[in-house]
Length: 224
Image (tube, rainbow, N blue to C red; front, side, top):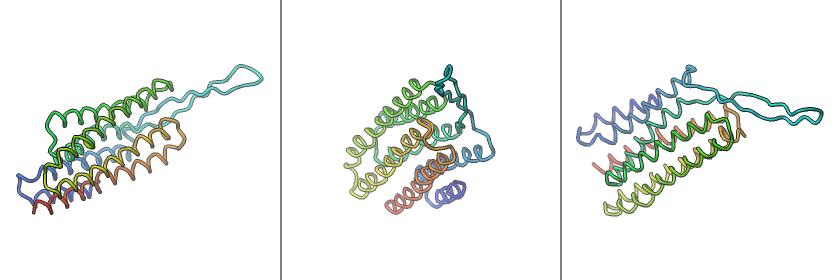
């Protein structure tokens, strides 16, 4: 993330100030992600979620087992800042009106916050309720980019329309994997925390540095 941030800031200084919006937004994405990963690496930004399980006892009363699972809340702080910035990149590329951008950004923040609430919720029912709200908010984002965004960008030149469809589709596919990982990690706890960390790290690299280099190199080429 650090190397990507330095590269993006360097690329920003190579273009006129009037054309730096995408560069600065993209650099901010990896900068905040870098801060989040540093916090988690030094042991900050980590909480504990209590897991209560009932163990059936055929020879007496059932026994409740209490364990704890690490929740990396710094990751959610990261997402609450970086994903709206990433959405701004895509919305500006498509030329979405301000109202549509606002809807997409607010839906994104709701998605991240309800995911955080779900991660710290002990009871199964409310936890999956928060998860359902997050998924609904994500569908709003998909609608804004996949329907409104694609419709509006068709009014631009063919290169921009084709590029938006490709990079927006790439982003939405990656973002669809995030709730799947959450469902089998924090949600149902079918994978351990180490596997969860690796999965999110791979997704974050694809969704931020790879996305950023693709966006900036292509945008600069089309603007040149």
